[in-house]
Image (spheres, rainbow, N blue to C red):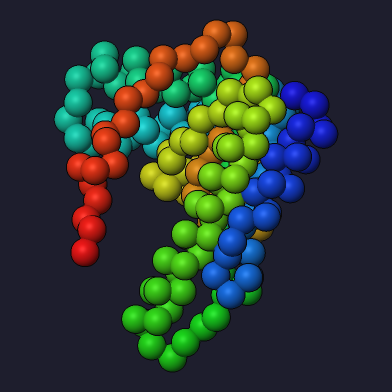
Length: 179
């Protein structure tokens, strides 16, 4: 994965709107096989533990863990998208602090959308994975993230071998109200 392509993705991501223009996004780019494998293993451990706690069949769990590991380890590049509350406003009450956090999460999600659209424009395959939300400590430890970086998503990046299947979308009219 050319560094200039990753730079273009990150530049596009940082052009997203953000609450108070505080730009709470942070990015950890992973291209080395050892770090991808360590991250995949740590996430797999958490996935396995969660699925075992749910009482899922062991065969299904192991298949899911293998699939997840393969997706992460085989991707030419991963981008861990994180948020930091360091520059967001702080209030005297829990209600506004919770809303400030929602605004930061929305800002990070907007950055991910810009990144994904740019990846498509560059002919890259990209997948937004939310696994870090279920295993933030695993991501923090595997990537040695700064203390204020909270992993929100992993983006797998590569050149697609073939076009994937088109995912149907519900007609917007089914999810829209006009008043």
